[in-house]
Image (cartoon, rainbow, N blue to C red; front, top):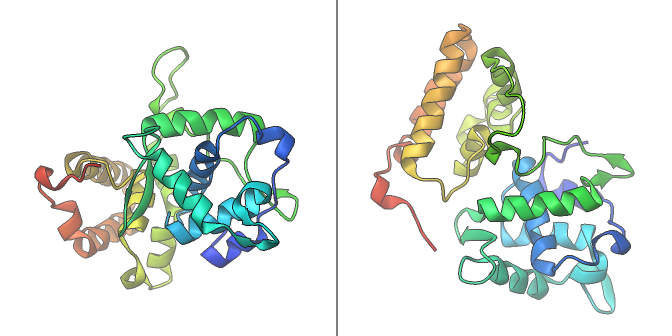
Length: 234
């Protein structure tokens, strides 16, 4: 199962404390942020608080009220994740929390220990290790398959909304989910990844996906055309 809306987070199973007890609350919160991004759900304070409480109830629910998330504890963890402390994430009140490369590496260690989330006992499909996209060398490189990449991107929320005729309901977080990027990614790199995806669609002559990208570019033109100086920093 893959959650389609934030309400689906209420179906996430709790993890075993014995498996994650050696990790800090900031690391557990980074794990929640990572999976929200994989599921293309906004990494807002509210969503992170709920997922923390579902995954790690012993650490992120209110004392005496185990069914209620302890938002204060999640908020403290989010503050500890910021660049001037642990350096695991950046944040923006409009777009949510975004892991740094260090944060992704730390989440990979946690995922090795506790695995991916599950729903009613069913394991959520894994989209690779959190740090896979940043590895270099040390193994045989995969052959690039643009057709397979386009098919993979068609499974993401932005394309599904397009097919449902609901593109006008989408936000920047969905564009970033399509591109596999974060809000702290520089505008130049965002444009470069968008062009690379368009080139892949052209190379396999996928007219439908090219039309989709044209509409996406028009909807998010202001975001895609931002000058490099608009790159936000913590």
